[in-house]
Length: 266
Ligand SMILES: Cc1cc2nc3c(=O)[nH]c(=O)nc-3n(C[C@H](O)[C@H](O)[C@H](O)COP(=O)(O)OP(=O)(O)OC[C@H]3O[C@@H](n4cnc5c(N)ncnc54)[C@H](O)[C@@H]3O)c2cc1C
Image (cartoon, rainbow, N blue to C red):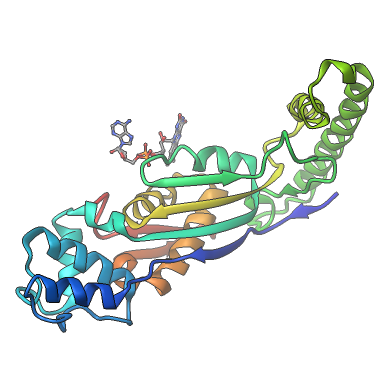
């Protein structure tokens, strides 16, 4: 039985700007060529926000000259919709089904594609250790033993259920083998625990990521999803410092970390 202590997170999609097209648009409109205030090529994420925000008032080449000042003003005044133009996509593995059940409650601006427990055989699936049993602040040996025993039992019951249903469900009642396999697996998964590992592709825009990190980076959020929120924040702060730089990370007495934004729910 495979136990997973930490997730793996891959940033697989990020925004890109076609500066030639931006320049053509500005020329067609008789506006100044890509204004200095838009830092082309340096931080494309912030540039997308600035280009879209300036569209509202056609203020290209006018007003605030510093892009950090420009973005902070948008965050401060909660002009959040322009942050929806910037999307980041992550592939996440080594997280539990309980984490993704909480994750997919985040609706606005999010897209998900998750490994199916109906199509994919879970016989050899791994399980995710709750962080309290990993980065332990106490002796969790006994808790780990109890968990491992429960997971072994669940895994064995899943395999037995698959076998029993394979014998019980007549092939001639299904239009295809795939449908029959799905019928078996969707029933057998009833005994899989919350700790079952899953893999998920998550895409969200910056407004949505900021809200997710604020909600799930808060001290009262579950430790596993909080850890994910903190890792995502760390990646996005490097990727788009102007859009996520206002979050501060602190450590709680229990050793876990939290994230708090200066600009809440933009
Ligand atoms: C610590 C913690 C504990 C939680 N405990 C529970 C629990 O016990 N039970 C439970 O069911 N959930 C629980 N949740 C989930 C929580 O209720 C939200 O479903 C989840 O955090 C997603 O938040 P959201 O709806 O703001 O996000 P999103 O769905 O991403 O929405 C973002 C924002 O868009 C707006 N919005 C989105 N959809 C609508 C809509 N249909 N109508 C109007 N405005 C909309 C709202 O302003 C919303 O805040 C918990 C969350 C946290 C962080």
